[in-house]
Length: 123
Image (cartoon, rainbow, N blue to C red; front, side, top):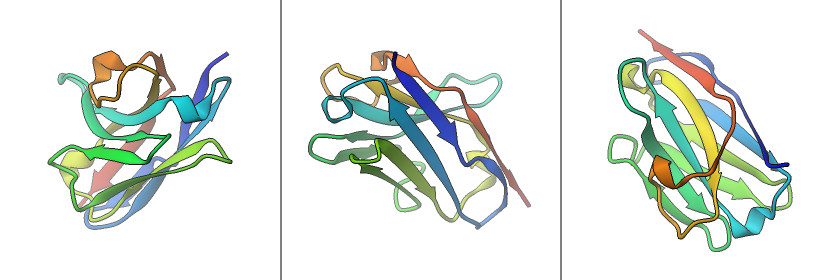
């Protein structure tokens, strides 16, 4: 059974840092892509960052480039999202998801989703 467990969310001040973790199990980790997506009430789910596990190819939304970093540890089957210099607009529920389709960072291409973790950025 494919399982994705997201954690690490919380309350952080503007300009602060937070690291989200996505622990994966139940599938061939190396064959998948893992993405971080976020959802704000009233808005559609948007891509934040994705990583192609087999070769480390990464993608970032323009809004987080230079501030967020995605990384993975294949042995631990874990993907992290390091969030630095956070802004109020980063407040959202963050989800990690897995896909075995051709690599992309579009939410609709991701087949398996974990539960979300809330990130709240305060002033």
